[in-house]
Picture 1: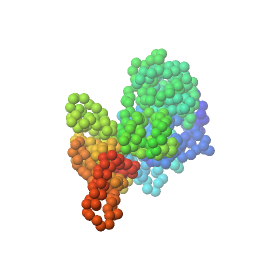
Picture 2: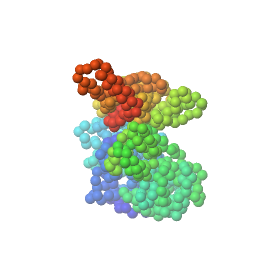
Picture 3: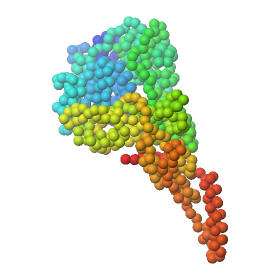
Picture 4: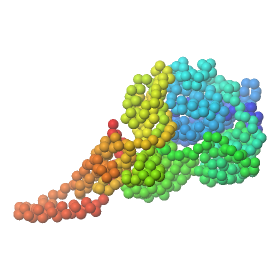
Amino acid sequence: MRGGCNFAPMSTAHIRNFCIIAHIDHGKSTLADRLLEETHTLAKKDMKAQVLDSMDLERERGITIKSHPIQMQYTHTDKQKYIFNLIDTPGHVDFTYEVSRSLAACEGALLLVDAAQGVEAQTVSNTYLAIENDLTIIPVINKVDLPSARVDEVKGQLIELIGCDEDEIICASAKSGIGIQDVFDAVIDRIPSPEDRLEGPLRAMVFDSVHDNYKGAIPYVRVFDGVLNAGSTAKFFAHDRQYDITEVGHFVLKQVPAKELRAGDVGYLLASIRDVSHILPGDTITTKVNAAEAALPGFKEIKPMVFSGLYPSDADDYDQLRLALEKLKLNDASLLFEPETSEALGFGFRCGFLGLLHMEIIQERLEREFDLALVTTTPNVRYKVELRSGGIVEVDTPAKMPPTGEIQAIMEPYVSAEIITPKEFIGNIMTLCQKKRGNYINTNYLTADKAQLHYDLPLGEIIFDFYDKLKSTSKGYASLDYHLKDYLAGDLKKLDILINNETVDALSFITHTDDAYHRGVAMCTKLKELIPRQMFDVPIQAALGNKIISRSTVKMIKKNVTAKCYGGDITRKRKLWEKQKEGKKRMKSIGKVEIPQEALLAVLQIDTD
């Protein structure tokens, strides 16, 4: 009943381009495994769990970080052959733009929901993205064979979310193979085929890319208009660069060359592109001869949201860290880094990430794949500072903040957050959001027991520990999704930490004025415990501009210089004390305080609640 891998050009009427939308751990990768198995795209002996998740990190965390498109050939019960292009999508809020571009390359989506957990925040967010891209949505309830499955309740949530009829919902179990045939039938019957637009100039959308050491950067494309073949010259709309195409082809787990890619096809192209930053997700490719006049809609440049300094624990590893970041950049164009010097930490790099998960992934890959020991500075967001002179500067590290006298206003990024939670935790979550300076928008009840809360929150407040606190306050049941909304002016100040009267740039951060005092006290108290005692008093101060708001002192180690005096005149002892006092004074003026790494890392765990 199933076909092999002979991918001859096929009428667009028999092509189906679709993706799978799901929250983390709802079974997306397992469903993809079953589809590959049923279409014999992969032999049973080669089959393993989460085939499309190639990274160890993806398998361990149960998330998709890098999308892996794949083409399958399926022979339906009426003997008609179909080509399925499954465009895999990342499943985390940090990669929302990549998800939207993958959705734009499809005509339909399988909306996969766990029968035990029900609709979660990421499911809702990605469903709205799919609706914006005018996709046909096929609702699928997965894991219906679990003892804890709540199929009827989850059906009600899906009907509420997308307004479908109950008989349109497919009940399945990707692990045991239940309902897989129904999924195939629904893909063929409900998802429309691509439009047959072979005539006219080529327009293909880049939805992802990967870097190969020998072939260079390889764009993943969906062809909307015309025909793409080897020998033509590709032209990118975003940067107006041109490349000679040497090969085109399809994805069948690995890249399979083809004669051409026609309208409706999904595939790749090789053009000896050495710099992956020249390939931007959402960009449109056309050809030099008979070039298209307008790009496909929806393209925007990805901008980092979270910034942090990465420094090697051993200063000798600086060059190794630079090479490691360059190698990671080849497969991840959204990673930005530039050299940075810190008095406390030495030489390192200021890195920009899409979000906190992206930062964690990069950090873990650097430590695992390149065997590096790293010190990370406090993550922070990008602020817009309006100057009294009328200009606006962007600040992604406290060290770049202009002097207080030059600042008219500081604007911080706000996100529109959506939290889905069982109703008994609503009070706890609202209290948490208020502590994080959130603005309440509204509450919707998805079912009698499940609520959807909408808040506008400062991004700087939620990149730290918000997700952990949300999970602990809701016993793990609440889920969060957010997207950048706007920059709003706030009463923000730069809090400097001075150790022995010298500002330590690695410990400075930008905070709201209402929190500054508590954070300053917490920092000084924590650092007092962690900085070792010296031969002189070490003052630790927190300062807002020129005003000291908190202070603690690491007391000196005292030496009894009069121990050798046995009797005699008191003036002898006073002479020794004066000499010691002069020595301490001189030592304090020239002495340097070494700040241990534990002190820098402990700052990340400061809690002012």
